[in-house]
Image (cartoon, rainbow, N blue to C red; front, side, top):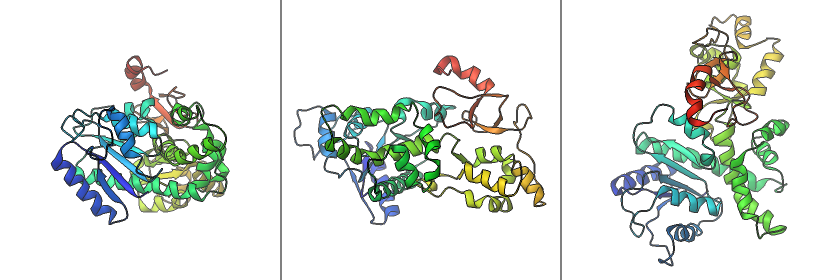
Length: 360
């Protein structure tokens, strides 16, 4: 990737964000903002004009960053909305897009955003100030750049998305597990299906090749990394291994499971472990879980409990972002990826949210 394109309507904040982005990129990519000066025909819709402007960036070489509330003034685009920007970028299909919103995050908003089908092909970032936003955007930029570079070097460009992603992640042995995350995944279909009409043969393959890095990056970030199953975040890993979170963060415990640490695209955005490699560590040491392994190594620690039921946890609640037991939670939610078998919703939260957001 070579470009970061910014849509921000408040001039002072735009200048500050661009300054901080440039500081972090250190000349490795350009940072630009869209003001409408590049539009060639001004009597068309904003979406049409934006598509024209965005076409100057080569496929897969630009990351778009957009404020979700463009209520201010952007020269040449008065009244422009983030939804219009996103629609134009989505239709082009070659560039990933990050949306951010200022203001305090409401309770449960992250959960709702992570599930919303219409956000599966866009990355939503919390706004904590221009410095943190710039840091996150550059990390996202690097992640997509890594995927784009890796995909370009694949020998078999016509591989399925699951095959391509498993090769990029260096884990071809779990291609079937990765494929489960795409089973019934509407976000993937929405990025692939619309452009097929009117194309055939070689042209379809060429267009798919241009879109695939964005598709794979969004799939990895918004689904595989977000919903514990193949990969587990720090809380989910502690729960799965039956190690209290405070103990799991200790260097002595981290060292035991360090070989299973995820180091692929977007790794700078958090901490994840490969679940199947955690299993390998337990099997090789002939232990039933991480708590057993720690005791075997004479390390004192507490097991991981469901704070509500006091049962052994083992799973991860998407709403509370805490360990949860199987009995005290609901799984197989329609919005969860098929492969996310460690992802649950605690029963009280399920009962609270289900009538409002259609959980079933």
